[in-house]
Image (cartoon, rainbow, N blue to C red; front, side, top):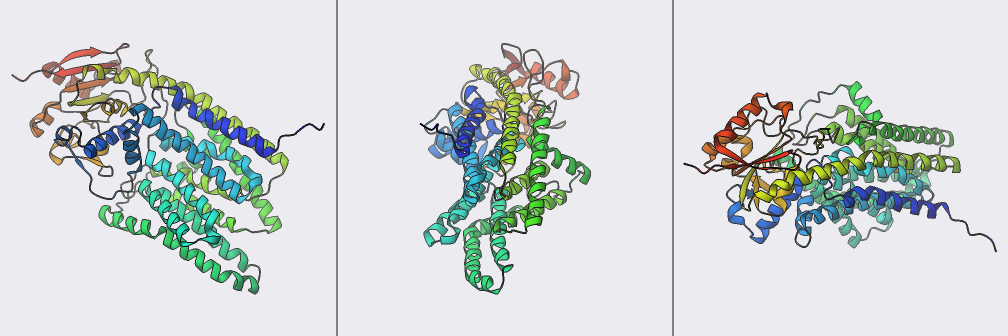
Amino acid sequence: MPQKRFSFFQIETVLFWLLIGLMLFPIWSNTYFLTGDGPCHLYNSKVLLDFITGTDVDFYSEYYVLNRNTEPNWFSHLSLAFLLTFLTDRMAEKVFLTVYVLLFGLLIRGIIRLINKQNTFLILLGLPFIFHHMFQMGFFNYSYGFAFCFLGIWFWLKCHQYMTWPRLMVFAFINLLTYFTHPIGFLLSGLMIGSMAMGKLVVPLLGGSDAKNATRSDTLRSFGNIILGFLPGILLMMEYLMRKGLHPKPNPDSAKYLYHELIELTSLINLHENEKYAAMALSILFGTLVLTALIGKIRNRIWSMYDGLFGAFLLMVLLYFIQPGALAGAGILSKRLQFIPYLVVFLWLAHIPYNHQQKRVTTVVGISIIIMFSVLRIPIHRFASDAVEEYVSANTVIPSRSTVLPLSFSHNGKTPAGDRISQKVWLFMHAFDYSGTDKPLVLFGNYEANTGYFPIIWKTDKNPYTYLSKGGGLEHQPPGVGIMNYESSTKSRIDYVVTWCLDEQFMEHPNTLELLKELTANYELIFTSKHQLTRVYRRLASE
């Protein structure tokens, strides 16, 4: 009886799910999967849910108001608020992050299968981009924007030849969802779909007059469907830009610096310095595949509509180098745009034919890169989760309906031994916001309410970023605050002050000395955590 052999596709399927499981492991194996802004997103989602359900509104409304504008940055808050209606705060966040990982991975795999079923091994090049730098910073809307961008591309590839009116409505809904998640994902989806449509137009034109006549009506219909599918989002974006303005700021980074950042793929270096080796290996792998594919294209002169994606890739590289430092309220554009050219050319690579040797080498190197990232990151996620548990243990002595000022003196976090937890992303800047997800609290470190881009906004006369910040501000290291100035200016009390990692590192800094002076005069120490990393001070009764 002949022995059954497994196909390469079956092996790739097993590898895909094993690697997805590896990527989900730190999310589910730890009490907290800490990201920079993630706790703040979850906290504001809880406040939003309480506003919607009429819970503790009298307490919150003294400090917060709801944002009435149609901001393209609300998906994460609405989704988390929905999940919080039937899940605990920590479980809601885990489910939300798991859906992101699955959507990102499954959709890029689905796109590859639609382009060329023989190239599913390329998924190993795409999976590392799930946990990019901005995701680790907690930019959930930005990250989900890519997932929905891929959803729009997948749907268009599947239906563009038979785009009926019902399908066009679905396509428009996906694009509208992408817009309300993040504008970059929306624009990138339009760019890639438009570039493939342009490729669909240009490639037949190279084949002669018969091909021109045969494709003209189909091409016009295809572009018309794309315009209709993106039109609602385009109109909303125009309204948004007219209301907010572009307000570009010059980019302080030199072209040489941007080049090295792009080549070294630093947007994948999140928590440990040694991630740079995995990121560089992935960059080299991309470069090798792209160079080989280009040589083959030039030699064989076989073109496809997917070659339009290479034009989109070149455009994204250009935009990366000429970008402003900030635009329309969005900052850190260098990191936001840096890995997008890789994602675009990744889809272009999906239509290239590969031999068995290329597939084997790419598979081995791709698996090694993902494992290397995971081995470096998983212990840090464990340390971060343990540290968050100690940080929010302060919540045991803080009653509901209290106003709290959390002050971080180590945004990177520290272990009980004093070692820095994260070497790159500031994980702990907003970590205490988890404390407000299971009880009603007003947290004066709520930066989102100061931006105007999220559902919850500070009342003008209560805004701590106006009346409390000084000497560098709340998020400075060490933080600069004037507690008594806030209370006298707003006629509101700060019931509790929570310090994180306040030790000898900043003890002699003027900001720290002024804070300790105010705490000594107006507060009492009521709690110190197990390893003395967290301290809670309670406001003394007024005389």
